Length: 320
Length: 320
Image (cartoon, each protein chain N blue to C red):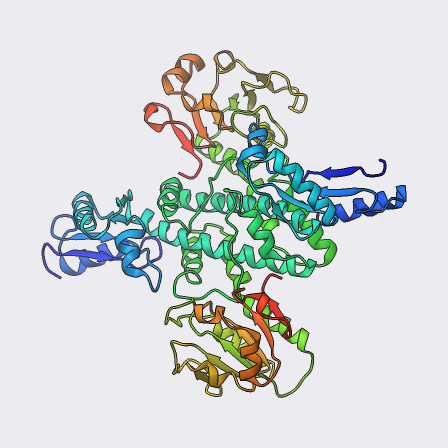
């Protein structure tokens, strides 16, 4: 760290972090912000798998800084990098809150979709049909329910925001209700499968997908880990397939992980779709029956299978 | 009710209502549905003030019926009325759920916005700035916070859905958390004003707006009634202005209601914007000071005032 350096931080952080970092640097270096060094907080707005196009073209950059000079530097720099006009925030705290709240909106709305999908399931109503009709109105943006919410972003931000609220004595309810609802989904899904199967012994389940999101090799905080745990609790032998992974030290030792579906599907009684990888969308029952040499029950935890391809096998779908 | 009649119901109803109505008619008349009479459930998708264009052009009609013939009749009829292709639901229950859930999404998201706007207020962050930046990303649809949620739709649907859930033994949390959060907003707003004013005596407040939504003459379940109650609790004399109302038996007798702003504003210490009528957006402090002959504190409960027009008067804005 030397005079005239520009510091840019881009991760999602608790509100107030930028101010703390600036003070820390000033105390340690005796340099003064906006005079001797410059500070920019630019919360990244990227999705795994499309980071470069997200930064360059998809979303306007959100910029904040320690003062006018830092903002000017940030604007010039992002004018070169991004094709979208940047949004200049009035302070680093507002930019920090923006990123957390963007993610919180999604976690809460996924949780609302999950709660309503269970509500509909129990009434014999197809949530996906309801969702499609509701979202034909421009004021409705119902999210997709699913077997779980993963990644280093959406499941984490509600905790960061709640911690700030607790520290400051502010009461918030939605972040924790969202987390409570979404974290129950793996258990709810496995309980639903078990209630259909009954008390059979020596069953083997194959989970399709270790990544937390489709078509990326990213297993951070994947809900698949919780699905594995719930199956093991029910004394079911577990195998996991993912085209992007053949080794994962985070899985329990007894769980076989493979990137070759043809091989790992053999002898499977339960198939659970945990990740919406494109290659799973094309699976049909002929393939499953032929390769598994069984008639497994299927739980489509992402609602990606074409149900017309299934006549003989029982499919449970989240929200139906 | 006679043979070959077609019954259409369009209000928002608890799930299962259509089936109950059909059974009731069959029992009372000895007619058989789909043979002797036809039943259509078409949940209305209209906003007060723009109902005809909503039906004819803005949203696809959602249609359901007691069977194929009823659906056919509905499709032909709505093919004449609406320019949008109708959405045919698989059963009346799905159509009933669709309408409730569309409204629930909005109530929950307004509640999330209200909770986050209070969170931001207490941290000294402008929620509206945060919201604008977050919503520049296509996955974010943060709603607007406000002094309260009114009308016969949005505040009511969560209760209808919750009643069905209770009847069927299904646990839901979001509808009541949404209601709890939104129903607190009038009290929260008045408490905030009172904490700024302190313990002054003999104050007069003017509430701008009795309608639950801007630019319509519709006071059903308006949050203004709760705002009035909270002010009276604080021993404040209350007046209400609305361009659409000069008489309302639902207001307490001691509350003066007028549709003439110039007159009713005189002698006011507190001005509270409760409805986003367009005519309120243009108000500036010169007008207020001149007509009130005071320097009232202003609470902009809809964030519609142009803050550049206020230099001398204190403005509190929801979410700031």
